[in-house]
Image (cartoon, rainbow, N blue to C red; front, side):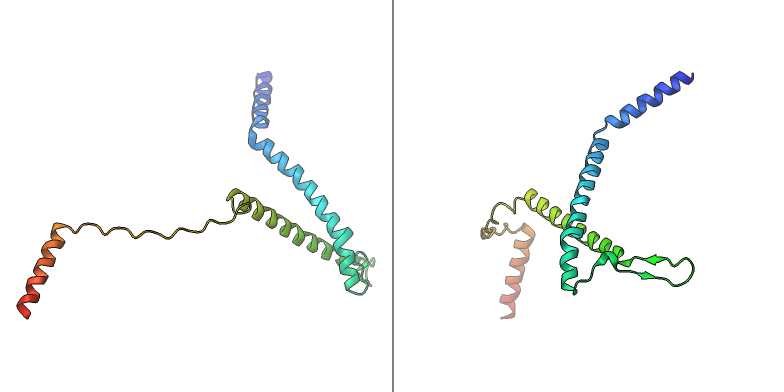
Amino acid sequence: MADDKKKSILNEFKEFISKGNVVDMAVGVIVGSAFTAIVNSLVNDIFTPILGMILAGLNFDNLGVTIPWGSHPYINFGSFIQSIISFLLTAICVFVIVKVINSVRNNTFMKKKEEAAPEEPKPEPEPTKEELLLAEIRDLLKEQNK
């Protein structure tokens, strides 16, 4: 009986792994971690030194405060600022990628928008029998009032 349980659990696991959604999710996680490495490099190696140069040589890595009581802990808020910058850059990059993908899907990225042709006026529908009768009554009342 224990062998049957092990086999059924193993079969369930094989079925779970073989589903397309799991593979797609794994690919997304791997690509996401690689993309995170690229953005972290962009922030740490390019953006932060430029920002430090603009801010008169301020180095975010050493930006922090030592608290003078207890075991004198060091609060490194420069690292926190770098994390915020990294988050914002990641969000901007993902936003741009989504916008580009959506515009390519809608075919607005590669070609100019076609000018909308002027709409032809639709012919008015034929009046119903009731409308014709009401129009006749209206015309008769106009003649009586004259």
